[in-house]
Image (cartoon, rainbow, N blue to C red):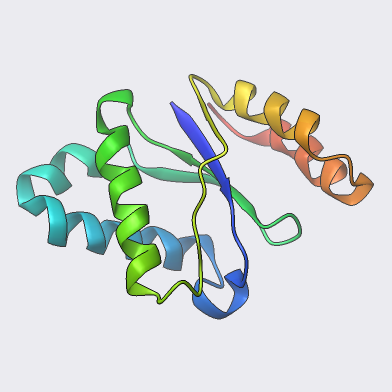
Length: 122
């Protein structure tokens, strides 16, 4: 299952997908404990991180979606709203997330960047 969300001020808070993923993992460990962290860790991955369009595609198992979304809300609060996560689509595959992005964004540069998502492994 993949979900995607846009954000603002991403450069100052999380310059790379690795720093974002580490912050989410730390939040999950703090709020869900070691057992929750262990359940979520194997399926959590940032599949796409866009600096141009300010959105990301995150992959997580269906059963662990709610705890991860909860941690995104907690991260928004911890960052004093420097970064506000809004999930705009939850899909069963990365392909459905890509289709949604192509419908939503009409900017040519973003559409080119979305076109590069074909290289992602599902």
